[in-house]
Length: 83
Image (cartoon, rainbow, N blue to C red; front, top):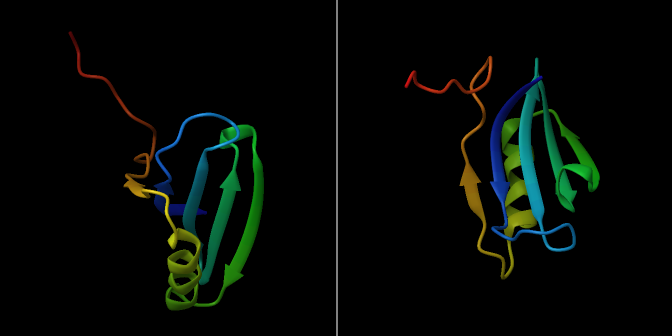
């Protein structure tokens, strides 16, 4: 499964943080709505097209939070430059 996009509501703390992820696996699109950070509770949605998944994401990001799109981690993770 490949992560395509990640949004964060810009808030820190287990009670305030919200994340939304868009992932793809073959021809299936997956949306994860997570509350509470890495250890929080997730709700998952699965779709047959990117358009359907993006429609759900637009609805999830609607509201008063200041959502930010974060770049997905590149394959193999991040590397630090040599000092």
